[in-house]
Length: 108
View 1 (cartoon, rainbow, N blue to C red):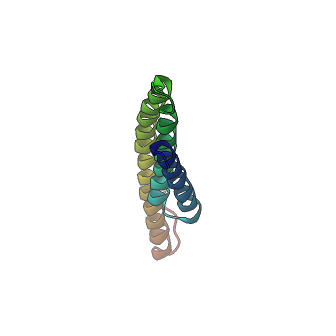
View 2: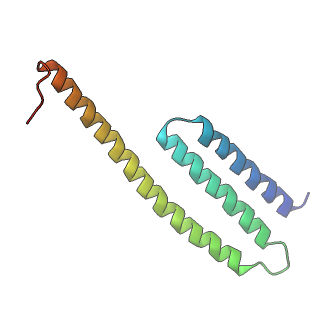
């Protein structure tokens, strides 16, 4: 087995294991990690495909670098959305608790 075949196999394995995690996990942070690992598997496959000839394909390397930048930005945005959803959910539960404790009166 050559190095290229090894990297291709590892990239596909990382992608498939992460896909399994994405479908079975329920925690949003863990699902986000699974999506990032799927991207890492994809990047590994792309870099290994770029090395098939004597001269590596610079287009695939440029795509991987661009993909890394986009993945980092999307991860930061997704983390912010997860945090906002978590804190908003806590505020909603607090409002419901206050409404039931105060005799069911709605705040103005």
